[in-house]
Image (cartoon, rainbow, N blue to C red; front, side):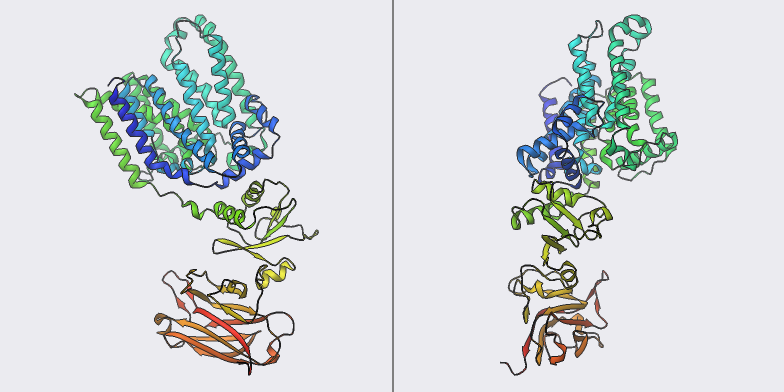
Length: 613
């Protein structure tokens, strides 16, 4: 197959398949990794970050990716769409570059398309498609393929121009400042030279050293300095998961795990079977004298090593190593297919259909972006708190973010473009909580309920937390789920409403508490509840009502449908100051199939003074 319209059509078809699998990544919101990466880049000295992109010895965490985060945040603010479009286009561009590289080294158009089909998409690489936090891997891929393509096209009959060598050195530096694994590019260049041009250094070593020695000498120095930088970068050294353990047994164990990821767990690889597979591929390449196969295996071994000597990582770390496997397998399939009439085209069609079906059958749907903790917080606060003054202090009683991460703080500071915002988390680790020796007056106190943040009264945070006292709603004598302020009366034990304005449904737990405010005078407490038939069916199910801890009556839950409950309340049970607390307790509660216990369907509750009409 020559470079014809057929090849262009095949390439376009592969891009359509890739788009079908990955377009949802364009709709995603910032991930937790995005928050950390963007905040780290934003709070760094911009000149130090910019210099570190070329000054590869500076101990700065992945400065090229950090620079991209900073540029997009400065240009577009806290809006993910431009960054995510850029990152998705990077994936598409990387595929086109990969095809160009495969076309250069694989031996023909068919092998290039076969290799591209094999590495086109993988359902275990979800973070690669739905999070810009993997931008470092995209950059590593970009510069690795770009460097190898340029290097493969050099004419070995004469020394490469100095300008061309400088460009390659620059690409290697950018690769290393994109991600630590970028140090593998010079190794890959040297292996490429050995595999494809081994006869030159063997037959004329002095001539080879004269032409290529200075380049590889410079690359060796850059690589060693970059490894030193990695070992002295605080962000990497403070993360135990990134610390390497140079043990061969660990390397084979990790490779086996990653092979299992590539097979979606259908094949359980061990260190022995993984090493056997690599050995067989390498042996087949040597036997067939297929340089593409040999280099593909070596490519995989080299690029997998940085992640094979650390703690297990998600599947997306195979994004670059998979390039080598794709090359090796495509070269093998192409060698066999050439022996069959029209076998090359048939091989590509069959392989493409097979891998597309395999990924479609095994991939999982992307996590819906509307459930993202980062998106829900950002949209609500952008709508309800469009601006905050400097040094605003916020306390989050509960939140939807990982306990040990700083995502909540990063999210809010980036949203308001203000590093002075103070965020404390009551359920967070000690370093995210207030110092008990130095009490803080909070401007805002929030609690997360049913996917949104409710603001509590900040006058006395402890009391507001205990009794769920809201800042924006006053409490009176009447609670009705048809009214928006019903949440102010709830203390504990109420589920989320279905938000139906006509027929709202509000389940209680077996134990629920409400609060009211009224004067200490003889009163009548009444409430309306709905009892479904499955709740009323068993006998012995009762609702006990207590006011400020004293029982005022018991109502049997035997009548299906609307139940009206009314009990007198003595003046002595109602405090002069503070809230009147009403507890609902359901004995022998109904249990859902999933184990969740239910109380009653609540509709309305109120106090009326005795004798009032």
